[in-house]
Image (cartoon, rainbow, N blue to C red):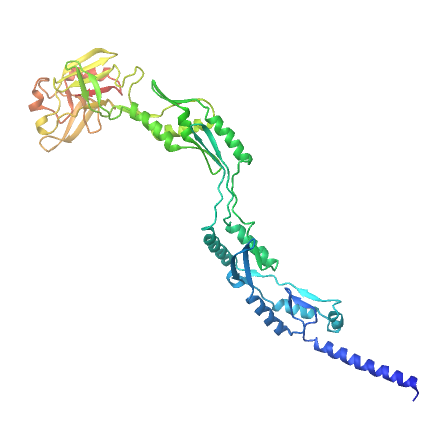
Amino acid sequence: MNSKNKLTIGIAAVAVVLVGIYSGVAIHYGQRYLPHTTVLGVKISGQTQSEANQTLKKRFSSLKYQIKDGKKTVATTSGTKLGIRRSFTKTLSTLAKQQNQWAWLGHALGLSGSSAKVDPVINTKQLHAYTKALTTKVNAKRKASKDANMSFNKSGLQVTKEVYGNQLDVDKLNQTIVSAIRDDQQTVQVNQTYIKPAVTTKSDKFIQAKTKLQQLAKESGKVTVENHSENITKSDLYQWLGYNNGEITVDETGVKNFVKAMGDKYDTNGKERTFNSTKRGTVKVPGGTYGWSIQQNATTQDVISRIKAGKDFTVKATTAGSGYHADGTDIGNTYVEVDLQNQHEYYYKDGKLTLDSDIVSGKPSAGDSTPVGVDFVWSKQQDATLRGIGQTGKDYATKVKYWMPIDYTGVGLHDASWQPKFGGDWYLSHGSNGCINNPPDFMTKLYAAVDLGTPVIVF
């Protein structure tokens, strides 16, 4: 055999050996992953699908996540605590189907490779529970941010700048952790999750509010009730005006105290009056049904709305009840006067005595004394039937031609045809159940003359 044939045979033999080796390696990778194959950065080259699955499970079950603030570690935790779960089966199966075992040499030489990602499944409730617990714990020792603010003192409006703290925002931290997990990062930086001031001195809203507050503080305002008024001073506005949560505020309690002070000063409902009587001179009469009072809630809200409007204003107080105040008095100069001591009644119209008569008031010994007070005629009825329990303890139903109740317990003015006489001390033994008995002829005139709302002073 010549040398040429020997060389040919040798080359063929080597080729057969190499093909055999290459084929053997290819057959080996038929059930294993080729060189330079990774999943989520973890090498699984040469491993079967089952082995790769175990490798990945072990790797990610022990994976730790570090939550850091710059170089300082805030917390270290596991994927399990964060609610992270990954299933590698589908990805590994797809990767095995896609690889060409006969291309193993290119993989081995690094000319090609295979990699895959596995998107995590995140239990959002569990993750949020973790971040909430973490922020609650760490924020207790961290500095809180504070909004810019402003308030008045004696010198005027003072601005307090915002403060930047380092407390963590639970929602921002939650989002940052999710982003890190999806990017396969194990380190989470929290310095972008700080709770920032919601209001700063440079924000447009703050600047506009500052201008508005300065404008409001220059207002001129007053509250009137009948012929009285109380001015709202600059000091009042400085105490009431404020700024909270990005909004201009007016202190409701402060305004209400102002309105209440007006009520204490001017309200007449239930208050004792000094009265210039016909026969007994100046007397003190306790409060009754007559009078008025400032409705504090309604008036307070009116004042607040007018302050916020930003213009000079006058608020007329909302009142309830009855009373005269046009001439500076409460009772006025048209009224019915009932003098129990003298058993006499007077009707004054515009300051002039128009009608008067003896009367019979309640019987004291029966516990039916006519109640004293400043009352008013709140109703007028003809041919009425008065009902109640009499002095004998029995029910009564008495018909009268004219009936004018003056309080809310059943006491009023009416005709009394059954009384043989009026005045003097007759009431001590023959007094009424509390009402003011009038002679029938007189009551006819009185009923026609007296208007609804007329004060009745009983003393």
